[in-house]
Length: 122
Image 1 (cartoon, rainbow, N blue to C red):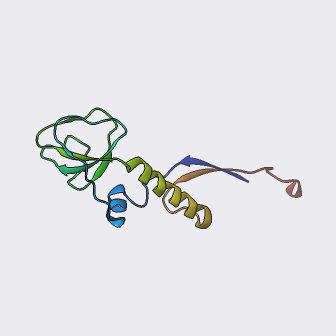
Image 2 (cartoon, rainbow, N blue to C red):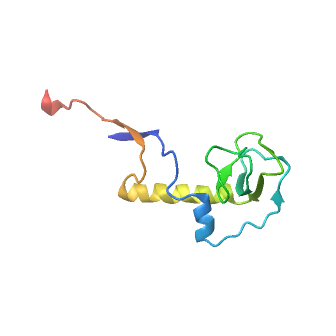
């Protein structure tokens, strides 16, 4: 029997904001309030007036910039330098536990059988 991942989990069990809080890490980068966000970089929202980031984002949330999002005076963020690295550690930890205990989060798998039906049932 072989398994192949069809649909990976939509979210990890622990968010980047929770990791920063649990590790007692403070984001000490300068606050940005103008310019555009770098694609692929993680940010912490420190102020938002008109929510130009993503639906549902609020102060204290983290997000990964996926397109060129311009900042206005009412939107302020701080860059998280190790965001991608910390998220990769969360993913690796989840995968390790899932290998021992089974899936933690809803996901879909393909199951391939080596020989179906086997010769015993012919």
